[in-house]
Amino acid sequence: MADKSNIAARLPRAVGLLGGGVIGGGWAARFLLNGVDVRLYDPAPNAVEYVQRVLVNARRAYRRLTQVSLPAEGALAVVNSVADAVHGVELVQESAPERLDLKQQLLATASRAAGPGTLICSSTSGLRPSLLQAAMDRPELFLVAHPFHPVYMLPLVELCGGQRTAPQMLESAAAIFRAMGMHPLVVRKEVDGFIANRLQEAVSREALWLLHDDLATVQELDDAVRHSWGLRAAAVGVYRMAGGAVGMRQNIEQWAFKWPWSRLTDVPDLNCAFLDRAAEQAEEQVKADPFDVPAEQKRDDLLVAVLQGLRSQGYGPGETLARWERGLRERVAQPQPTAGSGPLRMPTAEMPSDWIDGNGHVNESRYLQLFSGATGTLESYIGIDGEHRSNCGGYYTVETHLSHLGELYVGDRVEVLTQILGVDDKRLHLFHVLRREGDERPVATGEQMLIYVNAATRRSGPVQGKVRERVLELARLHAMLPRPERVGASIRLR
Image 1: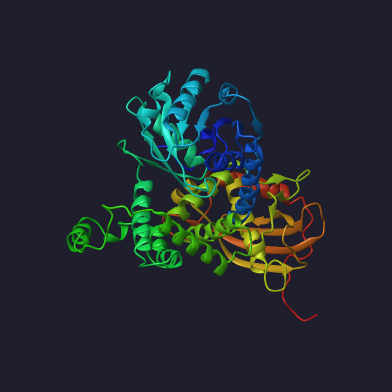
Image 2 (image 1 turned 135 degrees about the vertical axis):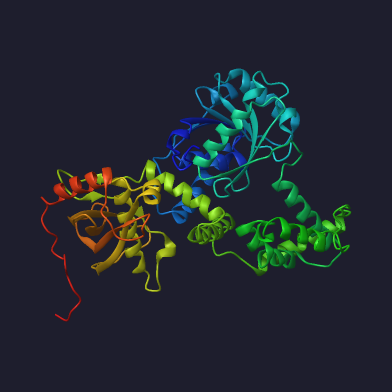
């Protein structure tokens, strides 16, 4: 089985986007921030300005979402025709309005103009791919890749092939979207609305009935979801907690359709009085619960918090985020040797607003986080990746000493310089210097002692193979450096 963490080669060099609205703009941001060039076609006069606004929000969200350095941003080129958009790209993503005739026309034009082998996808929310590919020259290269708004934040993308779609195209698309930090879900059979939107439609329909019958307000409906099963569903889905076949059977027999609670087979009369009442309640909700930042940014901040929290557990969407970050580290987060045999310079990081404590500067715990990240990056540099750690072992910290010499603030860009002070068969002695980018004065230093732990025995043991060779060579180079002034410093009254 292919290693899904080795994702660098699966990213397209360039993509063509047909449509730059809510969905197309989100696609543009996700591709560009993953280092992919974008050729955008959208005849709307304000399309470029809208995409730029989305990109500003996406950059802000990504700085809060991950401390791993992103690749160099892709280039955005705005073109004047479908043919120009699909010229020389490896993937085309159509995100036009949900009109079958419009989408069929765009996709047929793209199919004729694209190079052989170019994967063509549609962002449709529910149109069947067999209908969309009907007029295409190469329908075997087409499939639906249905994302969710905001595209640059929500990881799910539903992949659905039509009757004439080549099966390998689904595999190729899944690899591409996985490389961009997404969770591809293959819809095994064509169905209107695919999977997630059908579930969403069912909840929305029942919610409108509760609203229509004056059984709940807009505020109460939102509270009911976000304080109960909404959180649970985000973490574990709908049926994972059933516990397998026996639990699933008991769940269905005990609960499914036993009480006439739902009105899903009906739709409410969406008359003017009802729409006015719903609109009035929604307006009251906005006034009663104002956001402290623009609504889109508040939405992104909340999603960042949820995803980061789930990442700490390594489960569900959090595992997807962690896997994407591992891929980013392999592609862009490699340390660079300074001049001569100098210490390793880690990729720069920008201090986000949620790292600030009550005194207005970066919390002291974040210094340790930066040094721990530098240690992890050094391990990757000497060859300790996920496979090595699982099969052979890795270094574990047994002692750390921090010295706080200055303060950091929101927006400061920092770098960590890491020097190997000593190494033997089992131990690795490191010294980190944290400083602002372009400033020679240290903001903090960190000294660490690590020990190599064998994966099989879970006990300390000698590091072996190419990892041993690389760490010894790096230590040899670093032995030529002056010994840092604060090495071995202890806490005492002076």
